Amino acid sequence: MPYTSSITRTYTFCAAHRLHTDQLPDDLNQKIFGKCNNPNGHGHNYTVLVTVQGELDPRTGLITDVDALDRLVKENIVNRFDHQHLNFDPAFATVTTTGENLARLIWDLLVDRIPSGRLEKIGVIETRDNFFEYIGVPKEASGSVSNRIKEN
Image 1 (cartoon, one colour):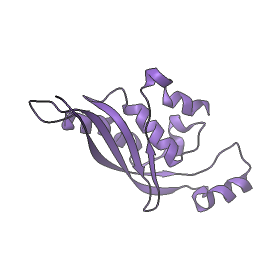
Image 2 (cartoon, one colour):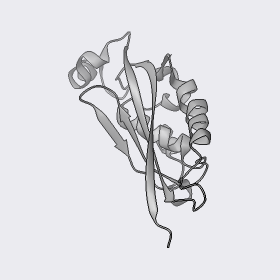
Image 3 (tube, helix red, strand yellow):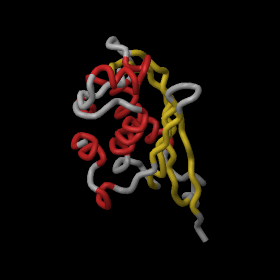
């Protein structure tokens, strides 16, 4: 009888951002986001954890094609965000570049493209003290996450 298991792969990129929202006055942005509201931004060495769940292939013992997953994440996440300023990414045009929103966006960029198995969750480690996790649902069940981000 097949059973479900999961694999988590880690990826890294370096990016800058500024925590700021035009929906609040500057003094309140400063109060809420503190040093992370620096007008010039600040950077992080992000670690992204991508967890895929599924049944083990009886021939290989694998849940998913790891090389294909690595290519997918490199092409759609690492290449997009590495050494970039997140505030200038079109997906963040109307939403704050929080770790929560970054995890949601990464989910949306990957959820329908996993080689086999299904995307279970995304983790984003921003600092020693900040870890964000997003466990979403397939797009057809909830609408596009990136569209929800843009609408906020």
